[in-house]
Amino acid sequence: MQRVYLDNNATTMVDPKVTEAMEPFWSEKYGNPNSLHQFGAELRGSLRDALDRLYAGINASDEDDLIVNGCASEGNNTVLQGIYYDTIRHSARDHIVTTRVEHPSMRAACRFLESLGVKVTYLNVNEQGVVSLESVKEAVGDNTALVSVMWANNETGMVFPIKEIAQIAHEKGALFHTDAVQAIGKIKVDVRDVEADYLTFSGHKFHAPKGIGALYIRSGAPKVKLIYGGEHMGGLRAGTVNAPLMIGMGLAMRLANEALDYESTTVRRLKDKLEDALLAIPDTLVVGDRERRVPNTILASVRGVEGESLLWDLNKNGIAASTGSACASEDLEANPILTAIGSDKELAHTAVRLSLSRFTTEEEIDYAIQVIPRAIERLRDISISYARERK
Image (cartoon, rainbow, N blue to C red):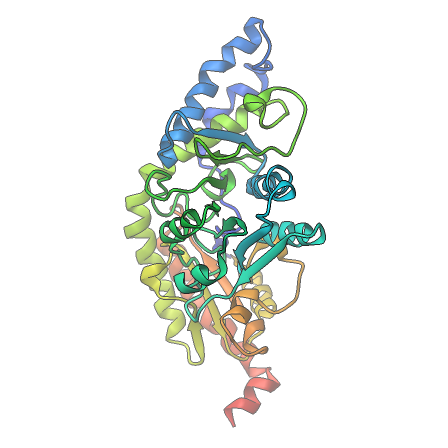
């Protein structure tokens, strides 16, 4: 049985080149980089190179800060809680604007801040799964401290108009944050073009290891922090740097940016091939205009087939997919994206996300195109609700 991994928005394989680059830093060059002796000193050049690659990967300037951390969930919480403790508690700006389709780490952190008295506006998305600029303009006021909108959605792959949203936030004197986890490695991310005050990402979404990410802070923006202790990362994030993972993420960032043309051509072509096969199945829809999505992502809804049932069937045939965010995979509620765009309750339980990477092959897509329609046909044959609808 062939094994096909189509869950790359949940995590990606570590690029073999990245694995090789990390290897010496486990048992050979293992010193603490903050130590004064030679065991610490021999790591510093490699760490500087890694940080340079991260800066270059998002086109950050030398005056900006890039705080290496554990993941984007940590970065998101650092921004939200940092803004609360440093700004919201002490000013008339007690309001945050975000969307209903953010990653669970954003939504949960916002709910926590609401328990502390912060006012949070959750913007709805339109039928394409993105927020309109008009709704942002209506929501942002003189009391808004922060606007936070993801760069690309983790379930649909839809790219949000964050350049314009950042401008709206700044016109009202608010700060702007974007979760760029699902953008880096798929489309160009340029913090000089999109004037984000804060940007967060995780390495394992672009073929770096799990457990490493970063928070970008634009020069002049308040320097938020969540973890106190030593003077690591300029005093903004305590804890000894994970040297192997940081070095791996730096290389992965460079490789991801070098592969953007491949993403926009070959990965998109393979994704479109799979998407066309899905859309040829009756009563199947895909959320969002494919030209406004990142190149690798499909969120499909198959009427009459529960997403979890289809996942199990695909898994038995060696195909890995998901019903949405892996960070909420134990939640069997209706898919929040399909709910947000106004799908009926039954349809909102039928979502399946398929996400490719630059390591996905044509043979794997051809195999998926053979297996998925058969699985859908089998499950529909035993679906009472689908049979009722067809009468």
